Image (cartoon, rainbow, N blue to C red; front, top):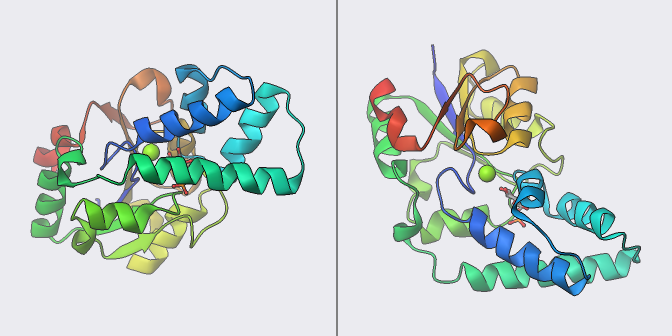
Length: 210
Ligand code: BG6
Ligand code: MG
């Protein structure tokens, strides 16, 4: 039985994945690399620094640690500009209905996100009060597919991993949930979500399951 649901943020609850793509695309362009949607799929769920390392590798670019730090703040500056107008309108289909339903049923709710911008996004979209535990990229440095972000969530809720269900839109996140010994439902297209117990198009499809 499921006693807790741990939500990924970007691309699951909120429509921000597209803005990460746009900011990385702009950055890659500056390196002379044409960043594709296929490339982007590999960055989903992955931390900011590890994403940059991958793009530098694909671009064949060797730069200093100081230059890396500059690129990281530039990417985040562009990303923050893109999400400045974020509002409850950017919640993905079914987000509010599912959060409401889980709360009503007494199922614990946690966030398990790699993003260091997670708190601001939850506030702008008005859903922060639904969460019993908040684990983000400031709390956990180890990037998905490492299970740390989900294990910390379970620990904070006081629920054993086997009774936690993770909702994820990224392959790295599915792998992290599996490594944590949790159940996992993929949100999106099955071809990008190998190893999920189930894949649905959006959170709305899950409301009646609880
Ligand atoms: C994940 C996104 O949720 O957070 C990644 O899927 C992103 O695309 C990562 O790189 C880190 O986010 P941020 O906001 O700390 O740069
Ligand atoms: Mg995601």
